[in-house]
Amino acid sequence: MTLMTDAVAHAPARESVYRPRHPLHLGRTVGMLRRGGTDPTMVIDGARIWMTFRTDAGIATLCLRQNSDGIHASAWGAGADEALDVVPRLCGADDDDSGFIIGHPQLEEVARRHPGIRMARTDRVFDALVCGIIEQKVTGMQAFGAWRYLVSRFGERAPGPTPRPMFASPSHEVWRVIPSWQWHRAAVEPPQSRTIVAAARRGASIERAALAATDGADRDRVLTSLHGVGVWTSAETRIRSLGDADAVSVGDYHLAHEVGFALTGHRTDDDGMLELLAPWSGHRQRIIRLIWASGSREPRRGARLAPEDHRNR
Image (cartoon, rainbow, N blue to C red; front, side, top):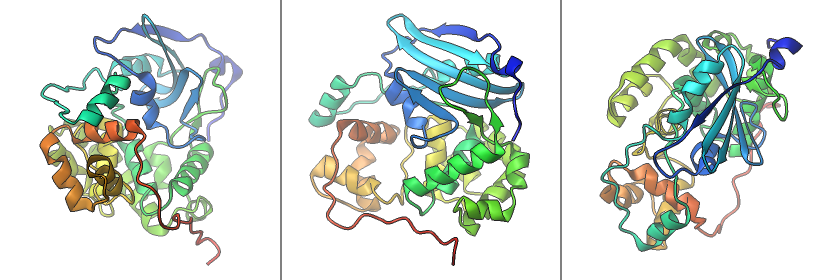
């Protein structure tokens, strides 16, 4: 972990204002990128959203706040200019919703009550891929704890007057050399840690190829070419980093049940979910986002999935 001098930490911010041409709900667009309440790379502090970036120029911290005249952005650090450049994409400027017709009375009402839900794009493919791999086959609590431990220990301290200490995620090179016992302490199982290390060896090329891919199928081919990365991890990566409006996380523990319950009143499986979402081909993630915004949840009938800890076995 790299420490930061006081001069760097308290350097003046670079400022900009982004005025979107479309309705925008900053919290429901950018806020969904946070990985739990203790995410060291992202903090939601009242009306402000703080994020860290690793850019070609260096580490940056970005703070976003929404006012009546637009999105006010402040950035600190060597990568401040690059962080400001990504603000429009974060706020859905590249999100093309042409041809999207909801055609479902309940979801149309949700869209009316919650306007401005856009697909955020970070272009940080590798970071999103690591998050997806860590989240494979574990509870959200376990995954968020592992992400917090690894980033806080091996990432770089972020600049600026952040509401709590924040860190940029490790570089590809650092992910490659994290010792096995540190993965163990983070409660990341060997199959997942091996997949992350293997992905880090190809991190730059995978990122370039995913960014160059023209559609979801091409992106899937790039991401699933990595051993240990399946369609669920690929979809989660595409949603978070590329703003993929059609990505569906097939194989998710809850998603098919929630989609089925919201659209029919009954749970379904992955095949049933894909059939229900088929009329919205090209925009299926938008429908899923509206379902989450609706607050509609299938009643829980069974026992909750309990976290497993294999560290002492």
